[in-house]
Length: 385
Image (tube, rainbow, N blue to C red; front, side):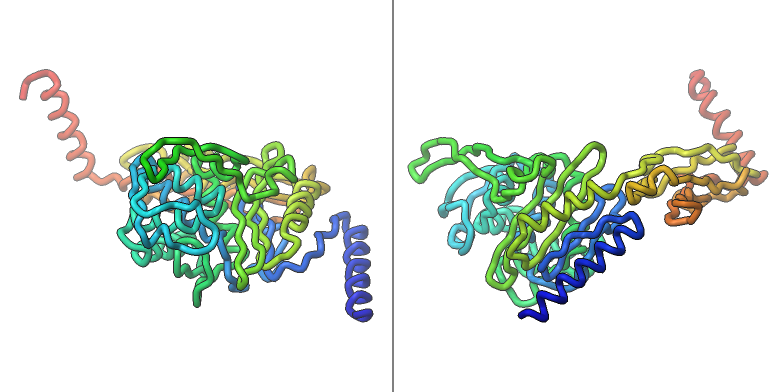
């Protein structure tokens, strides 16, 4: 025990020495089995600890359940709770068989109170069965690039091969937080939902968010707690300061509240977001040689932003690499240039510029066909055809 304590102190001293020498603050030391700090806009990883280690995610699973429900566009539908859903163990909304409740209220209960019964009721309503819904969850995870995640249920209760990673959960949360409905619900400390009791009487039921970080950290605005015996305490959290949103994930961490606060504070105190141009923006109109149209839009393929250590922010420079013109044919989505970000004269990131529209090559037959079609349209417009 003495030797282990000595090693921890020695490691802390080394990290502090390195931080002082480089101007970078030392990241927090934690005992989480998996942890990550990610910038929400760029996806840059600012802290990592076993970020690709497969671990039980507990109720952080419900992030995926919720976003699928929200994206279904069916939140205002009434659902009927099955006996199977009502009997689900663990944390619960205390739904009862035959209860009528909107999908929106189920999602709110799912995210704020972590209702396992709500998760099953959502799955059955949207997909007919939990197995069919889990297939949708896994397809969605794969499409997002969460390649180390495999779900076996919609709630996160322990099951063989029900796993995710710190990176995947941050990546899924990053996607989910772009949805305004999801972001609004997970940032809510307390709310009321409509509740029909067993006698059919209508009343309001108060829901208080299980995410204590919303009260503990001023900038906190999400996301989801989780705890099982297999997973230990888990937390996917988010916070926003000025124009920057950060996502922290800690898995199997008995100091999840403190560690998450330290991770988020570390990010805000030491990193700044340099924003150059938004994803999807038109950076330039590029002339097209021998094309049926004369220009093609150069679109920014991903966020034109960069997270840098605060001390390096003044040294960020941007270079645009685009040809003076491009030769037809041009295909929509084709890479036609790039944005290059430099920090202290060193290239650290590139963002592709892609063609926003297709441009066919100009040939005599195409010119004649276009001229003929234009003539027909004019004659039709004049009522001569």
